[in-house]
Amino acid sequence: MELSINANMSDSDTKRIAEIVHDVFKTIEKDLSKDYGGAMRHLWIDFELIQSHAERRPPIPFRFQKRVAGSAFKKLTGLPTPLYENVGHYSVRPDFQELLRIPLEAVASYALGLIYASTSVLVEKQKKLGGLMRINSVRIFWRHAESAVIRLPFAIGWSNIARFPRPFLR
View (cartoon, rainbow, N blue to C red):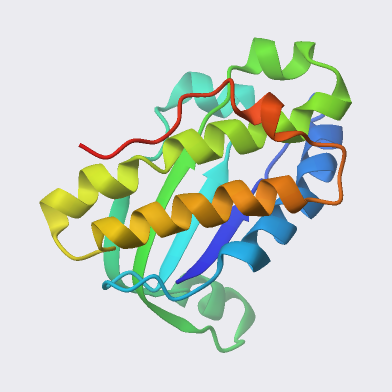
């Protein structure tokens, strides 16, 4: 499964936050992009950073799509776009007051904690959609996530992330 965590839209209040989390997200993506079994080949997680968007719509709930192609992008640019198959996609919305209040050096820990906790959706949806990721694969994914965070070369401690609810299996 290829993991992609993005914070690619920000505003003037969160531009610096987007820059901080970009490198952290890319490192985590590389560490967690592995074959976990099951049907899902891509997992796209959007970390929302525009409060005005959040006020107008709810976060994007998890959805699983058999095929995703960028046909609109191709129409605009004429460039070929890849076809992605078996894609899980959802967004994570932070508490904007908390995000803007915490020191910049704690932002990455806060973001990773929210993303880590959000992955419980994999178990919830796995039961409904069957076979997205095997239950044991989700456990392995979580163990890899914990290890990846501990190994980060950034000033992020697992103890900061541990304050977030740990994903659980029912």
